[in-house]
Image (cartoon, rainbow, N blue to C red; front, side, top):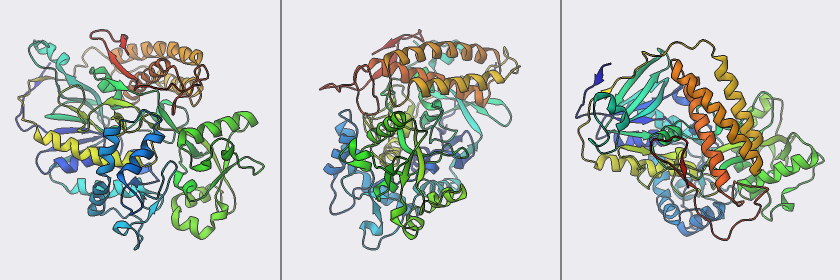
Length: 546
């Protein structure tokens, strides 16, 4: 077994090429080399799928306090006020930075910064800067162009992180954990095209891998959302928090050819109405805010009506907004639906809730620092306290930009440390997989049981059944991992099963209903509650502490 020698000019390795990862890379690259890993093509991350927009406290009718209040109201009592205030305070400069980068936000000569601001569910005023209905793609395209042109940034497509390199790996070289302070020294990464695993030594590692939507059968997320960063950080000993709070977006297009196409909340913000097949509106019966109630309330209302009436979906009616308005403000949705035979100017859109956003994740501070020195995390991978029990619409892109900058600043402020020699990846004791159908079968089973037992409405018995089966699946996956060479499908399945267990364990520990977590056994909301924080006991994978 060979080893990787130390180097005083090691790069920062960023795992993930979405808005969070690219923001960190661009802020860092003026002072040090950066490697960005993308496990699929650079354009395939979740950022490009974001339709709505990014929050900016910009208007004369708006204030930081108002944004913080809306964030807290959506977060159902679990939002960290200091985090919400910090991010709201830096929201205007975040939008200004994106404008300076060249993001083509929808204009309004009369609007602040010359931008058109829209409103989404849970917001008291119009404060969402957007690029029609494809904001994420507009932002991602611009930043990706910037990153591609930067000489200090190396982009690696089709590279998937396997695991973080920590002190436990150094024992192979004769070192022990008592010889060194705990630290992340780099990452093992799989070159998917060649099947080779490379040892990447790093001055710092940043996890920006997004959420865990693919753990559910129905999701608005792309195939990249397999919880890689959360699982790797957990295995490395970091705390993970609030994983029971999985946001189900109320309106994902219900169509056999488009199971992951999101119908943005901004459509409801502009007046689209949710209806039953007979044309009856139902949201006013569930919440006085109607279609503009927070996402958890709307999703549960749709779930309730579907089960009550035996429906596969409900309808989102925007026909009264007019063809010209819909084409101008929602061109992506209009075109995609029309290609599927749905003219949204003349007929309602069939919609169904789908797993959308992970409100919990790796515990970090406002500089992206995790429990493990040398390891940072930014974006949907993290728990910062911003989202509480339910994320307010369009706060996610904002969090990526604001904390992406502070993360880069903290990395730049660190004094370089000498890096020990790192062991190369050892696959001498494994062979090529004989039957990969096992991976596909376990993947399907995991996603189905999570959808049926750990979905929008939960019970203790369902959660316990899910946990029992997840343990069996993880045992099978661990055996497979130990016997065969790694592949993308195997690594993603391994990460998903770890995240599934984190979600179920967190849900079982919350004996109340709050925000995105609703339990039939504990339907009441407690007067006072706290985040769910999970940590592992050393040397014992299945030991959990509250």
